[in-house]
Image 1: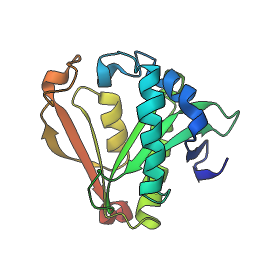
Image 2: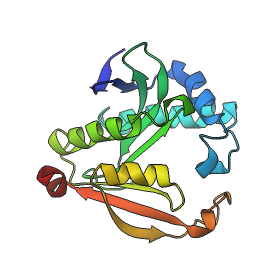
Image 3: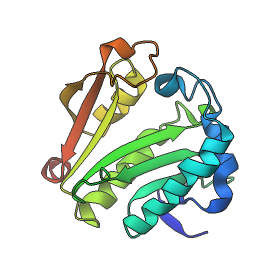
Image 4: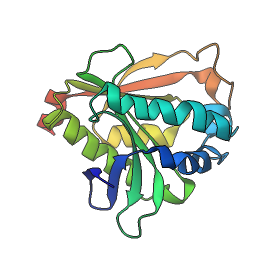
Length: 187
């Protein structure tokens, strides 16, 4: 399997059509889905018929350089989750979103920061990205701490979308953090 990006402890690769079970397991953990669906797991058929095909189509859309990437521990090869680096659907290619979703067993080990830091480096040095942004719920302190560690700065508060499943803390809305190439280079 071709590696997209490596860090000290992680190998990121493109998902394949054979990876549905990894995503089903990840999205089946109520703790992982807490700030997304209130802990409701994603139905396996939604993962197989909608999510995975969309992930694979993203590689086509962005030439394989942007999208969702499966993350594995280099030591032992365990799947730990995914990282995301991609523009909005019709957005400019030099403004991309950073995201991550990790298995509970991978929490608290610094993987979110490590993988995200490597993606920022790739975005700014190889992919011609001008700005990287990330969003999370206001109450998701873990994710906000990762963004701060990356040198991202708070730029906006977000209202809770009316179609979002109301979960604990969703009435507080969300937050957006950004980092520009110039900020990243100055670090």
